[in-house]
Image (cartoon, rainbow, N blue to C red; front, side, top):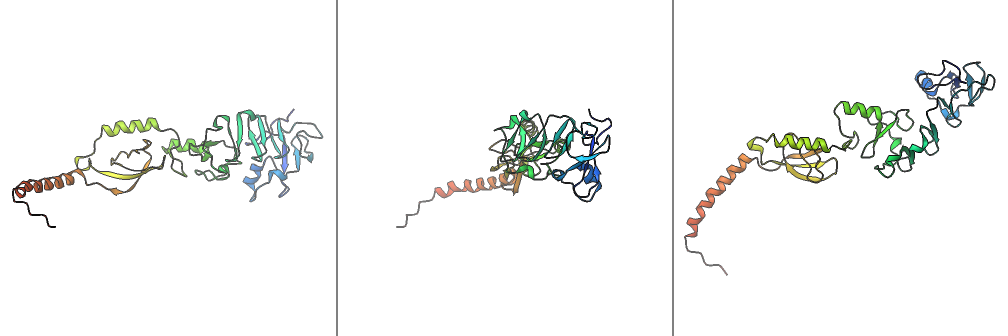
Length: 278
């Protein structure tokens, strides 16, 4: 049995870790790192102190003196003690993950454990988990917070993704690709644009855009509510330069001028044709 009233805000355990770096006793590496000006290397931990009888001993799952269990789960590589959360140690990741193991697989290219339903169903980005979260700039690979995989393949903490959505941001902070399927939102913008025609002087205006979702370059009608990609239908686009076609009012003036010149042609056509010069 485990001792009562054990652990910290991070883990449930009945022992303290002896930090290999400074020799101080802490419930976990996170508690250590919050107090000290250096980080504890979890893999170099060799000794623990029992929270029940205070015996300092070699790191193991149960106390050699009073036999209390230090943790329902114990990894002798990470020296992780905690209550049972169906954890497993992933050798390629090099750390323990919360399972169950059968619900996850290790993607060799992404170098990260991902949910089984993403097997063959996600965009790989090499060693993506070794990058910091683009929202909070904290480590993702060793974080206790679950990672969220965006359609573009980039990762961010699930909590950071939730915060991002709450603030109305719908694009990956790294590549600007849409962070989820936006088809319903694009359909709504279609309706809003159809109900909100541009002023007459801008109805003929077009603009060059690049699509953040499919990378297409195209020329599309200008509208203040959004410019729709001709290839994939996304409104997640960016303008390249200013208006490239004359607004309709100016175009009409040019057309009127051209028509006036055209009206003069029949008078010229009544004149004898000049002979062709050889």
